[in-house]
Amino acid sequence: MTQHVVIAGGGIGGLACALSLARAGVSVDLLEQAGTLGEVGAGLQLGPNAVRVLDEWGLMDGLQACAAFPDALRVRDAHGGGQLGRLRLGAFARARYGQPYATIHRADLHGLLLDAVQRQSGVRLHLGARLAAYELFSTSVRATCEDDSVFQGAALIGADGLWSRVRTQMLGAQPVRASGHLAYRGMVHTDHLPTHLHHNTVTAWLGPRLHVVRYPVKRGEWFNVVAVVHGALGQGHGGPPGSDPQSWSHAARAQDLQRALGPVCADLKSMLDAVTEWKLWALNDRAPVASASEHAHGRVALLGDAAHPLRPYLAQGAAMALEDAWTLGRLLQTSPPDAATDWPALLARYAQTRWQRNARVQSRSQRNGTIFHASGLLRLGRNVAMTLLGESLLDNPWLYSGPPEPV
Image (cartoon, rainbow, N blue to C red; front, side):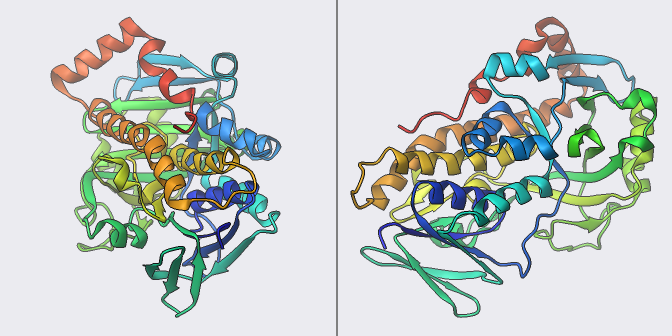
């Protein structure tokens, strides 16, 4: 029992955690509430810190087979079209950080992790297993699901997302925080774009109260497009008033997005017009992690969005979940061999290692949203700073050189 753990949540964070623990010799019961395993959404970005984790897990060949590796990040004005800033990626990122910057469809990353987990004999995956509650004992944790199935282990990891039931029981009911932002997400095949928009870059168009990001996925055969605007569901942005905030996807209409964006530059308009179907998400989060105790209590710990949900303005949501999972595995690998794992002590070290970095990423993500959507003097100052400071303003050595070794 000392080497058996229960994980709630079979998304990217839960799969990463199961893989990391299994590689360290721990057996896992992985509980996923859905009846079929898959991933919704569109694309995501993986900085060198996240790619470093995947490389250590032996997944680089799989990543290279399904991801894209952009040459640069370009920041442009959404209305005038002019370039505001540029950060070299590609060979520059490899030389500086030892790993590339990757962009990937969310389902492809999920599939890559799932395939790796299924090759681990110590992981048992249970579908349709939605956690109801857990009980703590002196040497174990017992998790009970809504279908009355019971799973017991030496520890419980809550990787069950923003609306985490593990978190609610561990920390008490705490309402999520509405950002007031909506994300329109779509995909477009490269062949459906004008040739001059085929370039292998991450491009961010910034405007007052809005921004749009597009980047290649699926080896560059497709582009993921995300447009973030201010507003609320049911206020001219799909779904009736009171639409379920926990739903990932709502119907979206292109004319609603066009109205929210207003007039945009020709390149951005061509990109948006090429997207034939939009999905809509309301962006919610929580306040930054305030202490290690918000990451772990005794034999129970939180991972990924269950611990530190992020606004997508630093492109680090998946990366922080991967780093969390890597840290747990690293702690196990550096434990004394043949010794029974002291899970409360190990999870306390995990929390101490992770909470400040995760809080910093949460804060930076929120601040970036303010900067991206700036108007007036703040917008002018942002544009001047990008011109004067160049790549130093867009690069994040403290972030991309991670993950940090456990404390």
